[in-house]
Length: 232
Image (cartoon, rainbow, N blue to C red; front, side):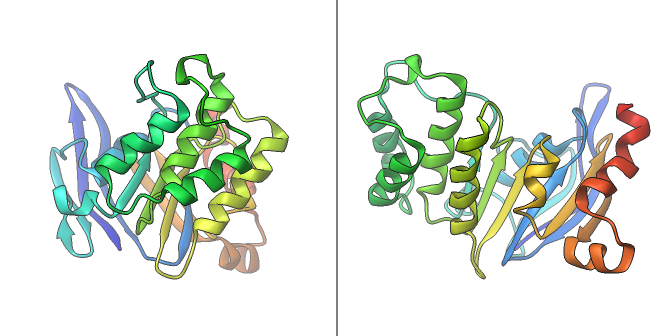
């Protein structure tokens, strides 16, 4: 479904993504993990075509990402990207104008789960409510690839249950979900694969069930082993 080949992005004198080779197939929920500055967000933005690689290539179904691939890839960034005058209803209409695969019915169902009202103004939403809105409108698309950057940021424990359920519901044998998050324990209950990044490089990609069976460690254990010396 997605493949990066020697993918590299340099900003000035900083290499944000450094020759990353990573192949991801449909039918999986992938945790993209690493401390701040690992290159996770830059890699995701190159998948969407929002950032152009300095070298290497990013492929969607064997073809370079571009205008056509954007029709099939739904991306939720960490940055707020709605106009302040918008209501929650306006956000849905905004997506409907841009994406053929957007479903108003699905959006309304997700809003009910997130306990968000159509008449709410985006400028009045708390950080947690804004996070839920971004997730709802992203998952309202019938995309082939969903990428959520820090989907649990600002979300309280009870709301995380609804978000987790919505993410799992969006998964399927023909779908690929990529989730970036610092809340590794939350990801453990959702993902079946993990890609660990550090300083712009891919450390390793693992099948989590296989890792538990062969190495006897969880994703959280492996995260600590890789990054403990970095973050400690």
